[in-house]
Amino acid sequence: MSRGKDLILSDLFPFDVRVDIRADKTLFDLDNANPSSRWDPTFWNPKFDEALSEISSKYKMQTIGSLLNEPIIAPDHVRASKGEKICSKYNVEYRTLKDLLFTGLNYAHINYCSDNAYKRLKRTQLKVNDILFAGSGVGAIGRIGLVEKVIMKKSCVGDLFIIRNTKVNQQYLYVYLLTEFGQIQIKKIFHGVQSAKISTKEIESLSVVIVPEIIQKHIESSYKIIFSVHNKAMECRKSKNEKVYEKNMSKASAMLNELIEKTEDVIRGKQKDVI
Image 1: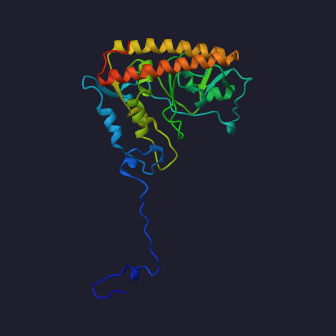
Image 2 (image 1 turned 90 degrees about the vertical axis):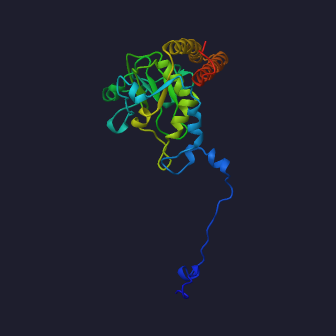
């Protein structure tokens, strides 16, 4: 096989060997890769760390895990295999991914589930100020919702994490998770090899910038104004007044985007408060 000390590739592989080298991706393309399209489970992109480096040095950071007064409630869902059902004839409010609108929960159309499902999922009973967090599915991870009101006496949640009762203001935490600083961390920990999902421990690992309580309260007050517009939109949709619904939803979205931007500027040290 060998010719003296010289080894020829064709001696080792008596068939055609071809190596394809991709030339359609530049370093810029790779640097801006979509996290959900990667293959490795521990994807790293410099822009994730660059975003966090913008945080003002005057603010401390703590993980969500260190801020919890109660454990995060892990997802489950109504199971037909157990005889559980989703149907409008029942009186248990059932919240899922479709309820997580940008400016608040969908109060215009509510799903209901059977009592046997509620008994098994009772640990997910909704409480005001709960943060609902989508932890699985490409395009769904990172979507969150804040519970401002509970419609029915009985309620439960399907396939969403619940973050409640933390050491920071819940409205602030909700808005923070919508900022670039929250979203960039969520994207960083997507799984790439298997179907996209985030675990309880990974949510607990997310770092939160601790701004002064007075700023957190101002963010809460600002969000409650946004929610009042959102709630008005929900009432319009229930009454099938689509034109006014769209007008109010557009207004609420613009207000929330502005609040997110102001919160980011506070975190960067570009302004002192959101008001």
